[in-house]
Amino acid sequence: DKGGWSSFMAKEINDQPDAVENTVRGRVSERGVEIPELTALGDERLAGIDRVIIIACGTAAYAGQVGAYAIEQWARVPVDVQLSHEFRYRDPVLSERTMVISVSQSGETMDTLMAVKYALERGVTTVSVCNTQSATIPRESDAAVYTHAGPEVAVASTKAFVAQITALYLIGLHLGRVRGTLSAEDQARAVEQFETLPAKVREAVDTHDQIAQLAHWMADSRSVLFLGRHVGFPIALEGALKLKEIAYIHAEGFAAGELKHGPIALIDHGQPVFVLVPSPRTSPLMHSKVVSNIQEIRARGARVIAIVEVGDTAVLPFADDVIRLPLADPFFEPLLQVIPLQWFALELSTAKGLDVDQPRNLAKSVTVE
Ligand code: BG6
Image (tube, rainbow, N blue to C red; front, side, top):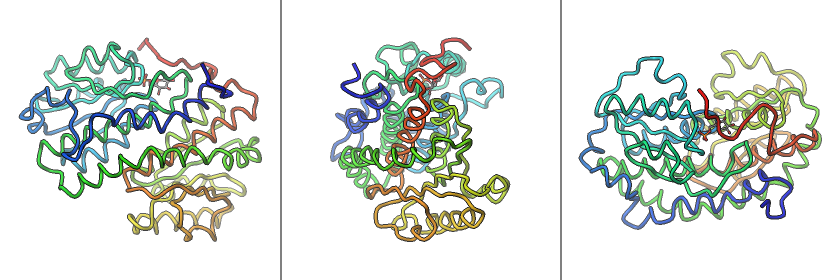
């Protein structure tokens, strides 16, 4: 049931405040974050983990990339992200102190299931972040941390993505608490951020009308670029993926710092570029670097759509369009920034008369390797 929306994707974008709220529910208190399924693994086992590898495909892998920054920060353990279908071919260095976290909306993606099995055979601790109750991957894993985004029908993932990032953050905070690496202050801040998150996600959803107008004049675009730094980088990749998936437009995401090492050659007159701008309050250094990137591409004719924190006026002289999002701590910015990009892909797909929910050649869940 689309609940009165024109597509499942539109409904699911709109569901996102509930998706994050339901994923957090019961796992956060004044004492911090506690996920019972991780507690069941034993604190000693969690404290002994010396390496985390996140495995996933597609949108779930980008959620993994965002989560990796936070888990490494809060739990002080090295984290890398690998595509499930690449994982075993590199003969990865694994031990009983390795934790593999798989991320999968469906819990049935064959590439990810095979990677989990490979890890299990080597005595690794496997944790599944999954949206589908009792799916194969969570059943096979040592622990399942469910996202509670509700059923996702549109092939292009939206609410599962924000719920996956949320769940990975909860895992990072749980590990940080058990391992004694998370300061009381960081814990309290994160708890407070979770409390205010659903209302901020709602405000991000409300950017729809502004994005719809933008999409109107951009419907003929042949290529769209996305730039981000730190946790904004995987959001740039996800924004590009959405556009490829449902609007069939060539799109690429880049780390903003990489621009001058190659991609800036692509910038020509009228080239649309979305830029995810970190907060000038909390990340002044990154902010000034990204503003410089905007100036560089603008000078070469790019059409800049800046996604900024409300009150950021530094970008105004250089941006053609500005999308404003509520104030949030750095790790919570991506959960807001991705939403206008989801709307943008949906609006371009609609403008081109395409089937938003059922894009050509794609399936919701790919159960072959
Ligand atoms: C792809 C889907 O095939 O699988 C994507 O089209 C999805 O939308 C990816 O992100 C991973 O799926 P899952 O179920 O493992 O999260």
